[in-house]
Amino acid sequence: MKALWIILLFLLPLSMIAAEDEGDEKILDTIKKIQEEAEEEEEEESVWDDDDEDSCAGCDILADVCFEIFGELFWQYATALRFAPFPYAEHSLFRYSTLVFEPGEYGKIALLQINTDLSIHFDGTYGNTNRLSAQLSALHFNLFNQTFFSSSHSLTNLSLNGGLSLVIGDFHLDAFAGGYKITGIDSFVFSMGLGSRMFLPGGFYMDLYNLNAFLNDRIRFVHVAATLNYTVWRFSIGAGYNYNSIVDVVYAGPCLKISFWL
Image 1 (cartoon, helix red, strand yellow):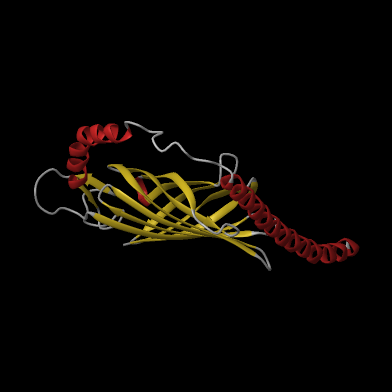
Image 2 (cartoon, rainbow, N blue to C red):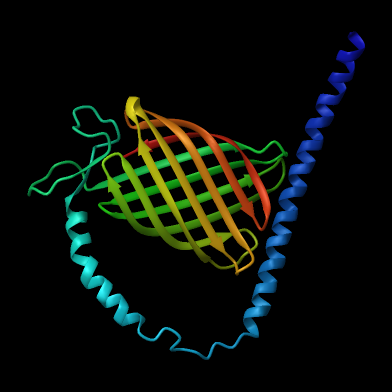
């Protein structure tokens, strides 16, 4: 029995060192792959001739028609949307939001959430995600920042997005698009995604966030986070799962999250 314990005491530090080395190598390989793909994309763009300036004839007319049809309806919805001071706020008649068509102030028209989470990937790497979400009636904006790190190396991305929201009572759905930048790419690339929240009884709510960025039609970056959260005053604590695919290299694992509502 003593011999078994001695063997375990030797193997445990060795396994931790091996995991750290594996994490460093994984991040370095990911950065190298991103740079190679970015260089290949620049070469393809340099030989591509875009001489079709009128490829979307009639798009302006279609956009004008859609605006005429849906613009007034969206405006009425946006001006009627109100939020609680913060989710599950005391003395509020609703958990999260409501529609008020009578004139006058009732609730807030803007809401801000800041959250950060830490994930472990069981491969020598870890992840830290920070997200700032701003809601101005039915307009949505979010700033997304994420860092993957090991004992000696890191890989960072940043994304700024804006879009529209569908908010009905305790259900919230965002659709947004913007720009995305990651270590190894000099400029921003196109990004788009969805986010949703479902506010449940007892102070709990589900939070789902998905962001996709595209280097080209073959290479993309995918970020998905799903958490179950519990709210205490303006703070929320949660646990869930964080999945990321960076040029087909996966960083995934459980996460713990802290949020603040303003």
